[in-house]
Image (cartoon, rainbow, N blue to C red):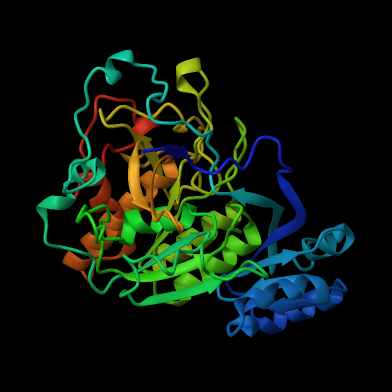
Length: 420
């Protein structure tokens, strides 16, 4: 079987910022005050709620006006070349409403190079290649075995989970009988996944069993599927598309949001105050946001990179990747920053079998992108068992139940996610 890494988005060679600006609004701001201060700065800002019937059309706000306001969560995105207006907005007069600005980023389905059967992934512990604690069987993937998913009857029934990624292969035989609620936030592209990355992640979190071979690969097979296409089929999006998907998911009462996406962060770079503010609001409203730590490290060569954006936000659960010996994956990023940027938990992320785009329908991949939906699936099971739990309580249960590992907390956080 051919084994591929996540799509190569060349994250280190692409432009980091779009030119637009994200602006955090005061939580007490009203539509009237936002409109008044915007007009005073000679800005025309649309409201995201005006596009709820056609979520792709929100991109028109950047062409027909100067930006958009995600009104439920108090975040504005303003077009490039509006430095003067932005200065007016964040001046002392209007700063009671427009609090903080930061550049909008490009965000990617996290990049990895391809590798093939017979050429093992590099490891910084050579003994890891001699034997494996876990391996796929005819009945189930090694990841499900490692997190104890086979020891419970819980399947996430009734729990709304959003996968924000490249969409889903909507003609996949394993999903055709499932109820699917989907939206695309990428102009000109439908929710159908032509890249494969989103389908693979959705399969791990929400999939079930290969109907032909009867091999189980998904954690929460009875959770409700909410698929938000926030990355293009080529695996590229922006903060605007991610924020649009997050607001849609939260307003759709999704208990879990799984995001296997990110942008590389340099040593010493601060986390996004705007994403962290949104994540805190989501936690208070009952939604747990889980994101991939990133795949930019080469530990076998001594290169360890900080946790990616937006997983480096303290209010977003950050997930590292483990191999079949429960060693940290060579590519998995680490918690290196003093403020934010920590690893919260770890999950299987090497040689992960899951659903894929047609015509193959299944593929084995590596990445923190694969580890993240294991944790999202585990959260759905916990919520099924504890329907009155808050998002903060589910976060605490995930970390408290984790299997402790003889590895640095900066690499694996609380340890391997477990279903108990």
